[in-house]
Length: 332
Length: 295
Image (cartoon, rainbow over the protein chains, first blue to last red):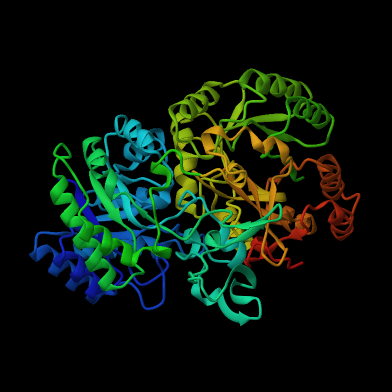
């Protein structure tokens, strides 16, 4: 059975994931060592200990994301985080930085390592590099590959492969995007944030409700339009006189209909995005995906998406829209 | 003395334009030239034998030639192209993803700007694998670069992106094809119509980013000519000038005059301002938002 990996930005979210059928839960420390470094989110030592206890008692796993890039001035902080994770009894750590993998491999040879999506490994040569050099057991694929490319890649790697199943969609290769730091000075790589909330300003104007990121107009909404968080690649811009979502619409990735194919091509785990989302989101999405995975089984039986699963996912989708993203080759 | 490098052409220029450009480059004062298609494998005006011809021309002109690998490698065909470059041990290779690094073990390669080298332990991993020069990530500031320079392995060279629209992001989606409502696999090679990329304005008509196929760039031009003396003092080895369709050799000439002491850096900054597409920015250098202009 394909493994369901669910997000937890807090202890209640972790419990919601476990209670609703997650096989693994991933989380981060409360600092810049992970790519969801948002105020009020993530785990301190006590919460991690409690989370691990809760999950392990129920036979589930806890993964820790240490997936930002250690910075020149204070890279020791990331090493300490690896030591803390190993000491806390985490089942695997999710890393993006080769220097940190090197450290983890040497200092904690028994600790299981996953390659984060932030490591930008989009081909099997890159994944094999991390496997050979640092003993990576699993790689999480960036959301840029087509189904055919995922299948081809799996045939050429020894590691397990995890793909994104649902959640907010990065249209850029994760770990290779400095758009946020270009506009705000902080990016996922350096600070664990994209389009940070502290740079956001909303203003009602005669032309409509405007969202800005460090002064840059990201979008403007008419009264009958739903306003979205101003993630900078998901605004409306003008190109050659035409105003449109020039980079990406606000939409959620949803690959549920591809589940049988993913299982059959040997994908080991499905990841749900959303450590920044509420326990209620985690509960709903986990429950829908648990049901779908159980129904799908080995991928060989007939699989149909139950309307109640779709309804649950629709309620929490960004912009109330879904896309297959790059998995679908015609995507443009 | 600081060395000057010309980065790979990030745009899709016609074949003849490209040959003419590199003939001029051969006579210019740059020390290092990076060659090859680094953005999109669908671009085919030049094939590997053409690049190797240009490489030979530049080497004969005394340049250090580096073949750059594509930053985002997905398909089997793209892997094949990357391996061919890496096997070509006549020239140095710049690795722009870790798949290329795997193929360059012990080859004395250049660790490109998209490998995310932010800290000493990661640079040590790459040095152990054979890197002889590293290029700082675009968003890395002077303090972080300075810290890394102090601890970099002996003999290691460093390089900083000093001029040009900055390659900030890569996507599975082709934004240029999307602009024309074309699928990526049938893009009709639209990039060839935009020799400096396609400007993306905000709804206030302010240039913000540039769409360049699957790559997204800054609309403003990184311009660090003003801090060349500081960069020389820090011990940075190489400055990268990223080609634009116009005035690139004038820019090279200005950087060359500053490094030789013929021009003062502030004077060069004034002279180069009209040549900066989208105006100058230098925010990343100072640890500020990259789009900002500090100096």
